[in-house]
Image 1 (cartoon, rainbow, N blue to C red):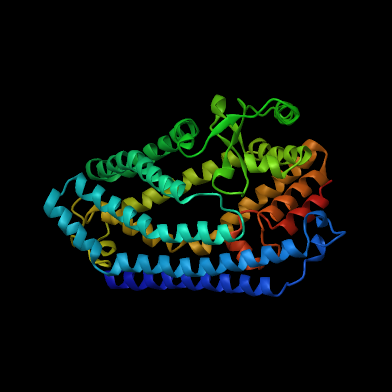
Image 2: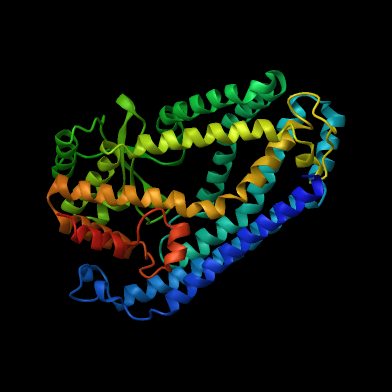
Length: 430
């Protein structure tokens, strides 16, 4: 396949992905509009009726429709940025300027990729601000100030530069100096980086953005630690994060591994759930660990990473990849790459991303299966089906989740089963 053929193939896949996403948004919007009344499962007397009413459901529908309109605009906005970067000629021009300024060394590639990331990040700021202050603010979720928003942007930039630039230079050095086996060394570096971040993120990075405190002694902490001990879940402690500083959305998660593992609970979650519901949520999260879901997902991602890097080692030696988007390339690879490897990496990842849309349902299918299993584990661990169902319903109510998503939209975009699906599965749990 030549450069023109690759260009046409990319545009076909890229356009198909945009069309699929647009169609899914339209289907989901129509599905929301088709259900003006509260579904029977959530109406008074239903399985989760205690947490829903007509007013809450109306807010949920309005929030969902606003988010869908925003998603549709974001889809076209992001597509326009991608096409402009690829076909305006700005990247080959920038690459040529960097080559004249810095020669054919590592600075040329690193600055090109850093510049692309910076441009994309800057262009994403207006969307992030609108979503945070207009949409989330309109429905009472946003608690972030403009000062904190700007401070977060600066901190994110500094952290990304501090971690990303050395990693980028190391990867480009491997591509340039280690020959055809560079991808093996890059694979080892990235896996080590991921494991290192599991230790560094909770200890050094997360505290830059949020405040963490040990959970206060009392009935709640005793119940949660007793559950962890009974299920033989190794955890050094429970920390409460000030999630309400930015949003009233809630969450809980584990961070670190081994002796570094911590249970982190948003302060908003503590205010939204009673003790039995909180125990159910923690049992669900422990279920992911005990059932091997975390390890399985890590192994799967590691295998995918290895495969992607191997394909990258082939793509960087393929001249049409560069020529299709205006970059210089040699007719036949004279070494491990056919053009500027930094440009090749960006082009390869961009082309590869066009294939991700059709694969989303497969990834979500596995994730959903894990969620059902963790729900069942939580019920068996606590012996309380009602608490788990009540927690899910209450959190959906507090977060204005869509109760009637279109099945296709859900398949492509939901890593968790819908609330209806989870409650019915819980009811069927022996």
